[in-house]
Length: 364
Image (cartoon, rainbow, N blue to C red; front, side):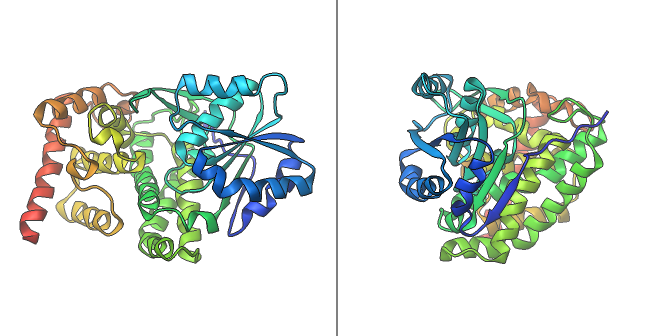
């Protein structure tokens, strides 16, 4: 049996926030806006103006900054007495996941409104939970995907280029993970076989990311959306999200279990962690040197990590062993063409690090 899941509605374009009120009115009359302090300042006035015009009551709740059980419980307590019909999540992946968790706890509909294209969290029903030290502690699931994803590319164009680079990293890996998951007849995030639709989306996502990332990064550095940015955002938010949930994950995302558990790399953006994971996965796959060199060249163009040091890692062999041991235990590791041990992962990481050292030596 195959299962394909997706949001009920997706809207993208410059100035899309002006449609928020009309879109929320389709879902209910009361809503809360979950965003951190910076994003509240960025979007709350426009969001409230749009909602007021549509007859929707919108109240702000400031997100504390880390997606933990305690933070979600704090926000849920603020909703007691007059629970909103809709939870609107504005911001990046942590805020969106916290709002997802909140919507599930209070039984509200969910709207995601990313202000950065740093990952594909806005379209998914997956919630990644961390502790106060940003160590990944578990994954929760909503009963369904968001009711609406609204993406204002004029806002995203003004976000830091590093965050778009993270979104590129999160998106570019999906082709390779979905291919591995389907190759071993593994289950997707919905617990079923992956439809061919997910594979087609993963490959289209990869081609779009490779074609448009450099120009899209230039658009963000200018602070102005263009067609390249529109295509890249669609790939990194919509295509990537649909591909991973319905297609499945593999080594790249398994690596986050290890990378988030050691100092330095734990603080790196999710998209950069999984991009490094792709280099490890390609080493495990035994890809030819020309293919790997092409990927590494793309990474260099788009600010993606070529080494553990690029993730902020400053440890040694003991920390690499920890990364490998925790990664080997991750559920996604079974979606690979052969069993992979912690020792295999250490060898693959060492190969990636050696390639990075060789590149630096050649540059000098």
